[in-house]
Length: 361
Ligand code: NAD
Ligand code: ZN
View 1: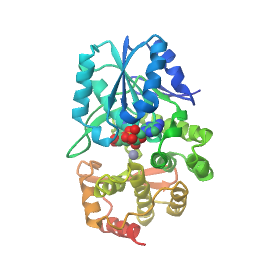
View 2: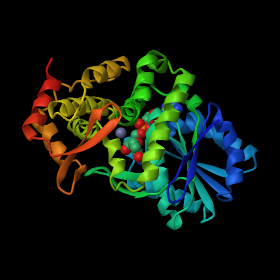
View 3: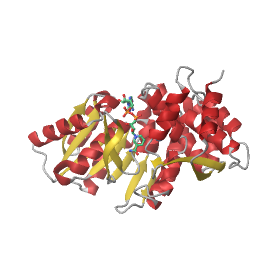
View 4: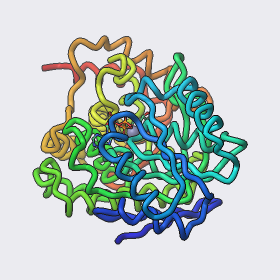
């Protein structure tokens, strides 16, 4: 088993192992977070893994109940939080309970948020089951839900007590969602680890074939990097923003496409844009974009903006992005692979030029 530690105000461990799910009940006993567990899952994951985990918990003598909500981003809202909370209250879950978030990023964000406000806060653990959740959303303690006005607009910083990563569960993850997570892994390579970047280059095929050993390596490295960044900047005062590499334009593309393209795929295009911007602004000390495009293509990820998206619309979403800090549009650019820098307010004409360039062909 591989173990990482996140050194936030309340430190916690990330455990990584194939087949780890079966070991969760015994570890929970040692953690002793409560006498009753609310296992929260979306409809899809509940069927694939939730029922089995519930049995494991009960066999180990733990009191647990499964609470299910409909799978999909559309469920990540206050209505779902309220309805899960009401179910838990009616089932008699009091302050001595703990929440288990079993699922992708939607489940983690939703269940983590609920745990942070349920009876003024109860402990929770993360069991991420999508690659995106295993390499990104389960670590760092950002919880929250969407509003009709935008994504993740209500939320809390609330660190989990444990993160259990069983990469064995990825075998049922749809291919598009595997690639979705791989984009975030490529991001960690870009901002922090040329070695991870090279590993992705050399093992793209294996990864696309769900090879367990390769997945374990990239999950460990991604969590190691995210844990380090979060440990140094728990509440996104500064450094943590390097994790937004590729996300500034990525979010704008995602919004312009009405959230019909998966987040990671938009980030993939956004990373190419950020690499081009780094080069055109003279920030980059070496050419990065050709190598990045090659890697993303090998991972089956898009590197161009779909023709049907309007340039002006993308640019207007850029301004609206919440990464406009203190009224300024801040991009994460690359000096070299592994060396990120912040850049304020790149010229609008240059952004337009890059968007058009990425739409051509
Ligand atoms: P998701 O939770 O909707 O999962 C994607 C799909 O995969 C769902 O249909 C789910 O049922 C299914 N699934 C999950 N695990 C599976 C498995 N093992 N086998 C088969 N199917 C499985 O979405 P996601 O992509 O995991 O996460 C996206 C969410 O994460 C967004 O809401 C985003 O805002 C959030 N996020 C949060 C953070 C953070 O720091 N908190 C970071 C990044 C993203
Ligand atoms: Zn992301």
